Length: 375
Ligand SMILES: C[S@@+](CC[C@H](N)C(=O)[O-])C[C@H]1O[C@@H](n2cnc3c(N)ncnc32)[C@H](O)[C@@H]1O
Image (cartoon, rainbow, N blue to C red):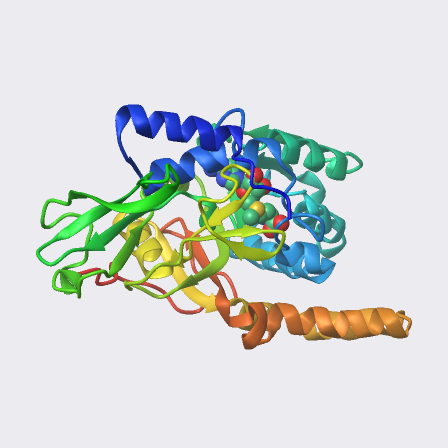
């Protein structure tokens, strides 16, 4: 076996910690994912069979086709605004948007009038998206942040985007909650440690104040900036956003922070900058932030139920009519992978966030009327 060679980013992080002391989990994740030279989302092409993970649009075109149907239904609920812009947050290789553009104009001719806005921080993935979308005639724009997308009626799609946002972690000690930090052990290796005490009453839900020693609580501060950006947009023009991600209905204790390399879980301290780091989304916290900011939040609903209600089963049956045996088997297994609760169907959830003057689009018929109890 080859001897482990620390990455350049690992060496830089160690030097920084030796000089300045431990860093928060959030600062560690931020550096690993977004360091301008060595960050995971600056340099690599992580998605697909050759990469570290596979996403729903990369499994089947049917995923993008169902999102297109959802966009048309949503546009109708919004009152058919024209011009309409479709924004994608974290568009990966551009597969989802390409599948959507292929089917949107077939579903409704007005969708020839849309403009596309891709919010992407990775230079390499931007290049893949530009190549993937080159043949589509609609105006296409790339941005670093949602706030750079011009105002106007907007549908936003975000598949596996929220799970990239860096989290803070807190660890319960006998008397109080403390920040979890990254430091160096006696062998000069990166490791977790217990950091400064968190002032009481901040961040940790009241019900967890007396949690048992060693409990972990995770919190994603970047959600606040994202939601205030959504709110600014949604208060001026009709806006509907669809978030799809792996997550849970919180608040909950426990560690969901994970590192993935070549489709296998690894230590978050191995190969910093070359490894995908994610955390599950607390959809209850997301909904509460939205409602507190004057938005409406609907869901979460399991991805399986969402796709089934939009007709993925019927779409698969149509495709099977022109498929050979191998293709038919793949179509059947793709639907199972996307929909079945033991695969992505229950682990992945969908949440719809709208301007407060818009009715929930199908299939979201349940509405969060008041902030969820986060205490
Ligand atoms: C897990 S991939 C998902 C890709 C795609 N949505 C899909 O389903 O295949 C995360 C995507 O979000 C992008 N990304 C991560 N953090 C981002 C940020 N803070 N702002 C914009 N894009 C980001 C990554 O470069 C990548 O395109």
